[in-house]
Length: 266
Length: 266
Image (cartoon, rainbow over all chains, first blue to last red; front, side, top):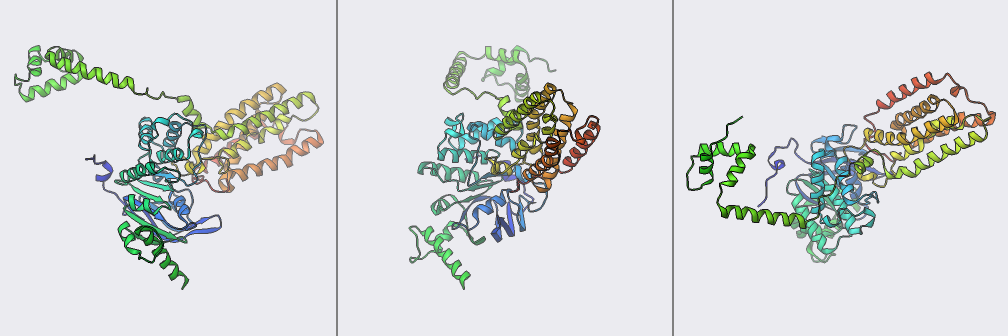
């Protein structure tokens, strides 16, 4: 049994939490996301794709760090591709970057509290929300350790804690499972399912098994465009015996990419 | 103010067999929430076994609380420091203060030279202001750039943190060397405001470099060659500097909608 949150019963005024149409985003001079269409709602969405497919650039654009070069992008019903005020949208965002920089002298608690303050959470709820976020990622014992003393996996979890501290409506995690040991990955999948109940979670990863285990929806990207969007079961059904991979999902993934490349080369 | 229920009613309220009618029970309950004296009466009139149970529960709770770690203390000073300044500014501020100290020392040794403190005052805050809003100097820039508080207010806060160090340092240096306080501080504030106003157009780092190079080439270098105080720093120019500072501050305030994204120019 679980409590029904207010967000689940309140009506939304927008059809999609994340909606991109013909989105183009530059990474330096190179157009890394080129004409991407994407519509996501509540649930956990896995973002798969080969290196250089534009996953990280897409994540940065969705996190409002990069300004799109073209197309339309709306988050939580607000246009974020122009010069509009991003403040309201940003309060509802959680973002874990792939290269995750931090201030080494901060303790984990100071870091998460600082991020909660930057996300303009009400002053009175910050200490409680910080403690809860740190407990949810299993770092309660290290809450007062300095960031520079943490191992890679712990840093990653501190990063996840700052991303979920404001109970974001859109949570963007770029390669969150790098550096986590197998047990922590299982806990992390549990956390993802929990958060995905009432928010839109987009997880970029290279690990197909993570997507199958924790995601309700799979998005595959290649060369800046969406190749495929469907359920994990459907992804597994795409693969045949002749495709590369050790599991049905991996075979489905390589089959979809192979077909896409064949169409592109024709 | 409600009247206290009679002891007889309280006795019937605590006795489960007495069958107090519902309406009276509710009114007693509402009264008990606010009245410590009547709660004491209720506690006295309960049976011994209930009191034993309550004592056991209280003792168990106390033990539990004592066994758990103490609540994290509130660190107002640390939180305030994190909000107004950032760690990576420290070396730049130390450098600025050291350069000003050297300038004051040189001036004491060679009084015939134009006041170095006065010549350096406009460019003193520029390096630290450039670092305060910078991609390459802020390790957590990607996290911060996607938060609601990022933008004009954050740049202003950090600039204020820089000025809180540079202005007292300039004040001390000018009083030691006996130059005009207004002609030291006003150019410093004017250049800080100009950096922000220009920074909205070309990026804070480029603005700081441009202003610093221009001032060095146009004012500092000729003054050192001719060993005469330049026209714009002669006594009597302080009203003009005050007006310029106000105008530049207004120009900076007009850019409040800029700085929403931390672009690669910064």
